[in-house]
Image (cartoon, rainbow, N blue to C red; front, top):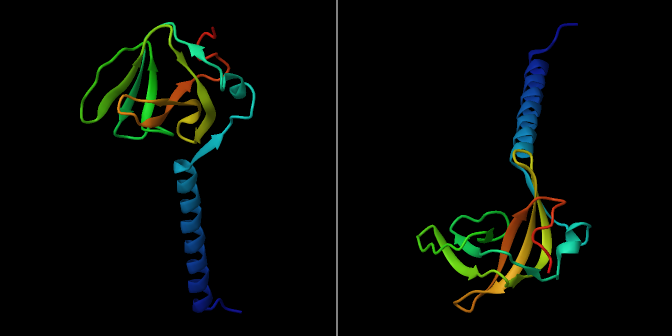
Length: 146
């Protein structure tokens, strides 16, 4: 029995469709990012709703590119006064002031791995209430608790 040319064409079409689908799945896996709320999981829950006293200056900065969860991020040990088009310092904390976080989130990406963020809320000088993110290393206390 000879192989029909229509069968070969159908087989090649199915093989090509499977190949394209496979490449699409691999591409999606490489660019896929997962954001997850870990507020109820230890040790992240231990850092929430507790005022952390700052030992040094800290600055909340706005950036025109969203970092992970917010356009605002907290930078420790910095009292910057940026006022550029792409980055602005919107609030500076002095030593002894406190910061409280209300959420913890996890960001996973095949390319960068898994990172953890504490999410805080504060009112900036304009009166706007903002959520800001603070990237920290898992298992380490973000600040000294006083």
